[in-house]
Length: 527
Image (cartoon, rainbow, N blue to C red; front, side):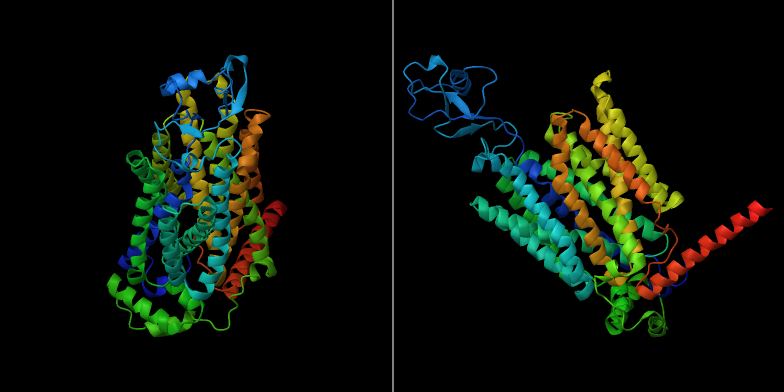
C-alpha cells in the first residue's frame, strides 16, 4: 500500500470510527437478504387440489374427497371428476368449479393460496420475483449515480426509508397488481442499499483492512437468511412474516442520526469543509491528534474533476474494465441464482435448507480472507471459480453416488466457492474504479448480475432436455469468467484512486512495471 491514501494520512486505516460505520452498514445486509430471498417463504411450492363444495351431500374428509374426485394417479390437480354428472365413473373430467384447497403443513397462508396462483397462473409467482429483480437491477444503477452526485449517506437513508415503508405496505395490500408495483419499487430501494452500503463500507477503510472489511461485510447476508428461516418457522402466514421483517427493517431509518458521510467521497468531490468536519469527528473517535488536518486535506482535495457516469465508457482504461466486469457479473449472477434453484431439489425441509445455506457463508468468508491476503484478488477468484466448475462437473455423476450426503457436501462446497467469488468480485470491482464514479460503476456492473438472475430460470429449465445440462452450462460460465479476467490488473496493496488523474498515474505505473518485466525477460534470454 502506498502512502498516498487520504485515510492513512489523517485518521488511520481502521479505528473505532471506521468500526462503528462498518457495523452499522454491514447490518443492512440482513434486511437486504430478507427482501431478496423472502419469496422462498412467501410462495413455497404447495400441493393443492379441487375444493369440495360446502353443500356436497356426502360431506367427505379431505383424503376421502381427494380420492373421490381422482380418476387416475396421474390426473392433473386442476381437474376433477364431474361429481354433478349422474354417473361420474365414466371418466368425465371438469375444471375445479368451487376453487382450490391447499396443503397447509408447511405454510398456513402463502401468496399462492391467497391469490390462487395455480392452474395456468403459476408463472405469476415467477413474475413477482422477476419484477423485484428488475427493480434491484435498475435501483443499483439509478441510486448509484445519485450517490456519486449527492453522497452516500443521503442516498442510503432515502433507500432505507423507501424499503421499510414499502415493505410494510406490501404486507397488507390486497390486490395482486398493486402488490407487483410495490415489489418493483421495493426492489429499486433494495438495489440502492446493496450498492451504496458496500461502497461506503469499502471507502471508510484503507491498508490491509480494505481486504478484510468488505469481505466480513457480506456475512450478515447469510445470517439474515438463517434468521429469516427461524422467523418463518414460527410465523407460517406470509403476510404476518412480511410485517414482522419490515417492522425490523424500519429500525434502520435511525441511521440518519448515527451514520456519517464517506470522507473519501467528500474529498473526491472537493467538499473540503464537510470533509474536515467528518474527519475531525473521526479523529476524536479514534483518539488521534492531527493538528495539520487542514494542510493534509489541501494535498488531497482536487478541483474540477468530472463526475459524469459516462466516463466509464469513454475513458479507455475504464472502458476495458467495464467491458470485462460486465461479463464477470453477468455470468456469476446467472450461476448464483441457477445453482440456488438446483439446491431446491436437495433435501426436503425448506427451513433447514435456507438456514444452513446462510450459515455456510460464515466459514466461506473467513476462508476467503486467508486466501485473499496471500494470493490477491485475481488468483482468489480464479481458484474459487475453477473449483466451482469442478464441483458442477462432479455433480453430473450424482446418480452413481452411493450416499445422498455426498451430493449435500458438494452442494455446500459449491455455496462456499460462490460466496468467495461474489465477495471478492464486489471488492475487486470497487477497487478498479475511482471514487467519483465508484458507486454508479459498481451499481452498473451488479446490474448485469441481476440480468443474469432474470434469465437463470431459463438456464435451469434446460434440465427438461437433459437433467444435468444446467450444471454443464454453469461450469462453462465459471471457466469463461476465469479466462476473461486475465487482462485486468491485480489491485492488492494498491491505493484506491479518487479521480481520473489518480487512475492515469496507476495505469502508467502498471505499464511501467510491465515494461520492466519485459526488458528483464529479454535480458535473461540474451544471457
